[in-house]
Length: 159
Image (cartoon, rainbow, N blue to C red):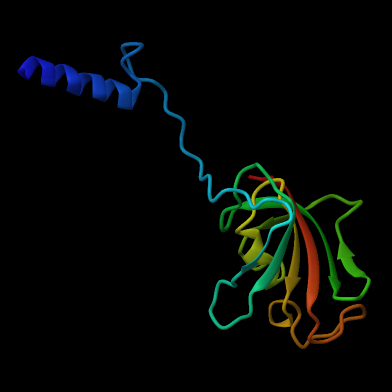
């Protein structure tokens, strides 16, 4: 009975480590954060900002990505188009080089940052960003003060 227990323990250990087939240690790939499953195209949901007290960002998935998850502080390249609701775009990367940014580190509007850290490579989302997470009470030539913004964001690559 002791021998059977020892054999079963050895078989289990070999199965878990996958090292027994070659007699040595099998290389083990470092796990990559898979994150939650991709949101399917057409789905709608909200993303909360990183601090309490702000209204959520509304998200509509235009295309579901299948690549790596964006991680907080990680670098990514993206295409984007931004406009105040009902207005012409005030900025876009379409037809230009994609923009390289760090996710969640304050280099883009807070509402965009909140969504970026939920996305994956290949995702193409339409964001509706409340004024508090956009430009707030600041006005510009194409963006009135306290405007709700619409952004289309497509993650081209994740580093």
